[in-house]
Amino acid sequence: MIHPPLSLYIHIPWCIHKCPYCDFNSHQIKNTLPETEYIAALLTDLDQELPKISGRNINSIFIGGGTPSVLSAAIISQLISGVKARLPVGNNAEITMEVNPGTVDRLQGFYTAGINRLSLGIQSFNDSNLQNLGRIHDGFGAEQAIKTATEVGFHNINLDLMFGLPGQTVVDALEDLHTAIAYQPSHLSWYQLTIEPNTFFHTKPPNNLPDDDLLWEIQTAGQKYLAEQGYLQYEISAYAKLDKQCQHNLNYWKFGDYLGIGAGAHSKITTNNKITRFHKPNHPNVYLQNNLLIEPKILTNEDIVLEFMMNALRLLDGFTEAEFINNTGLNIDIIEKPLQQAYAKDWLTKKHKSISATENGIRLLNNLLELFMLS
Image (cartoon, rainbow, N blue to C red):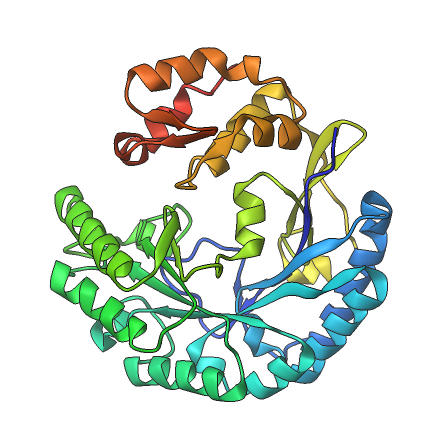
């Protein structure tokens, strides 16, 4: 089995404020941030995992959270230097960092440290929406963050935006997109607000959420507008200018390998014709005790098929038979029956060598994926 491409994910688990919709492993800062100790723990974690990826190159690095920009620029520089001292990272490797617009005073230092792609968590430029979402910035602050990032020297910038917000109309959602496009970011992540378990919104859902028909109207109007502005949709929630797709996320969606370090970080590593998943303790206090226990799981063929499809079918271009074989180690025959069922339902289509979801398949993605539950 050929090793798929390998990425590195680094999790920073702290936030200034926990947003009511967020189900990520994030913890509100209550006392002094132990950033020096945490970076030391991250590098110890990486040292422990190096034998699993011996001889392999890192194609991209993503520092996510939480809110990684709560850390000082000096600490981020120390982290990146420590990673590069331990792993072969290409000169042109994409190195992304998530930044909250309310914590942008350190952008120059992050740029100097080696970050070459920013992902700004804007969510909306509407102050009322931002307040409802529990964000710590306002619309003016969001626009200032984009301006500052550009002035510092960042040319590869993603803006995270949400739609389907309480009381939101098609006009409201398009206004957010108009404001974003005025700054010509290289990439947009435009995704629907969903109410997830273990969040404040799950306990107390917001009022006046758009219904399914309005959500579809918003989504199709936004897709049309973004296409007109030169932003190519390549994944259900991702839009990019030509050749500006997020390489790190593409590796996830194409079922590549990734090593995760940090509290709660997950990994998927291919070794000796086996695909293994494992993750680290969620709580930063446990993680900081250097109790870097992992919970390994060797994926079954059924696991591999479903996980591959869950990722690949989010891409508008889908996947090729060669990609399925190379990245799973399985024969394409294992999915022949569900493929034929999906073709018959007009949920999948095959054009040239690419197998991808139709518009019906995207709208009914959960139903489509059920066909690939082989167990």
